[in-house]
Amino acid sequence: MSKMSAGMAVVECLRAEGIRHICGVAGSSYQEVLDSLYGRDDIQFIGTRHEQGGAFMAVGYAQALGSPSVCMATNGPGSTNLVTGIAGALMGHSPVVAIVGGISMDHMGRDAIQEIDQISLFRPITKLAIQINRAERIPELLRHAFRVATTGKMGPVLVEIPRDLLNVQEMEADVQPPAKYRVPQAPEGDQEQVRAAAEILRQARFPVVVAGGGVKWSQAAQEVLRLAELLAAPIINSYGHNDAVPNNHPLYIGPLGRAGAPEAAEALQQADVVLAAGTRLGQFTTFFEHRHLPREARLIQIEIDGKEIGRNFPVTAGIQGDARAVLTALLRILGEESPLPGGEERRQIALGLKERRQRRLDAETEPSTQPLKPQRVFHELRRVVPPQAAVVFDAGAATGYGYDRLPFTDTGSFFCSLELGCVGSGLPMALGVKLARPECPVVCISGDGGFMMNSQEMETAVRHGIAVVNIVLNNNCWGAEKAYQKHLYDGRYVAADITNPRFDRYAELCGALGFYAESPREIANSVHEALASERPAVIEVPIDPEELPFPARADVFRHRLR
Image (cartoon, rainbow, N blue to C red; front, side, top):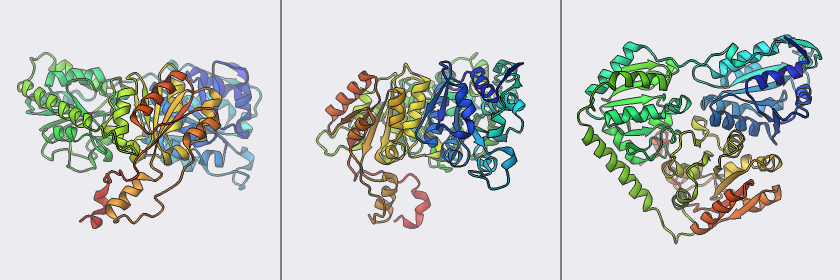
């Protein structure tokens, strides 16, 4: 043990965990932590302009590295501003440890300034929310926070530290490296279920593999490809995990679900066996219906979280375990055999669907349309965004066109807010991705509404030199909501249309580069110049405000459908 202040104990515990950046807004309740960071270059506080930005930066950081990240906020309004980002971490299975200050313990329960019940507030949107009650327990409970955040299906943990505990100037601190108290586990699942799954796959007429987030977190792309090749099975991905496997593989068809590829849905509709690897088959993948997943298909589901197995669809074999470990076990059983019968026919079907999708996307040129349609913009971005880039999507209708239209050849190169569908998450998530991978080009694609929600973080990007290129597709409306009003309410628009400043000039006012691109050539030139500059940049692209997708959740408006 070593003697140190409580503030230094927090910093040393985070450093032991490999944390190099803490994201958030400087707060009075943890001044002792900030002071303990003074002059250090091994761990840095990245000051954001809003706590939500800090939370989403931490989400992007955790997803980019596949390891824990940290954000901080002061008590009261600071912590309430974290809520959306932390909820996003829960729904995106991101191991974010949020440290919030608290009022002094002797003031609790007296409606003190900025006093709220933070533990109750965060309990529904975290894996664990705890309060530290003695300064000496800071190392112990921070270890527990990281243990919970990274165990099983990962997710956020909130730790509240009352300000008077952080004011302790000398204490015994038992700081330990992670290897001493949390050892990564990769369970192979129940072997009887694995053998049953292997037998189902042997008998399959047309198996299809659905690769989900668990494939990404467990780095199981190669195992998915080897199994698919053995089965000659088409590969599709669940919603938001377009990069689960390299998209240039011959058996990869495209993304499923909301804004997905119709060819991927067609492949799944032919399946008699579905191998769902690392996916809970959630709403935006399946809509909880059989519109894509055939009712009669036998389902093999691999999930690290046992409560998700069979939750949305009944399984024939359900395996609770790490996706990579379970797929390796399946390969051990199936790999001793010759390629399974019917393989060449399945391979030709997969190649045909893949080629048909490519022809469809290649036809989306429309060079003369002004303003550009979002399909045409993504056609151009498909040509100019480098394959090694990390791409972050904000939520919204305009960016939704990109799910089916951008390829990802590197696993772990696509990021979005997943099931939270959080408009405004794009820019701060992209900053977190760039912090985690400074050598990697990072491109964020937002709508105008999403960009404005956290546009203040452009100043954060400039101040810290975080070179993210943000492409803003501007249709001057809340596109998803306007789509409902267009298609289901006969064009009776209420609060759907908005106005915006020129985003290129806004970027320049923040000290970033600004570009305005109205044509495909201007888009290409702007992207090349912005990436080459290695500076924060915004590229505004006006798009057709009348090009609005049919709502993905129109089924809940059956009373409006004719």
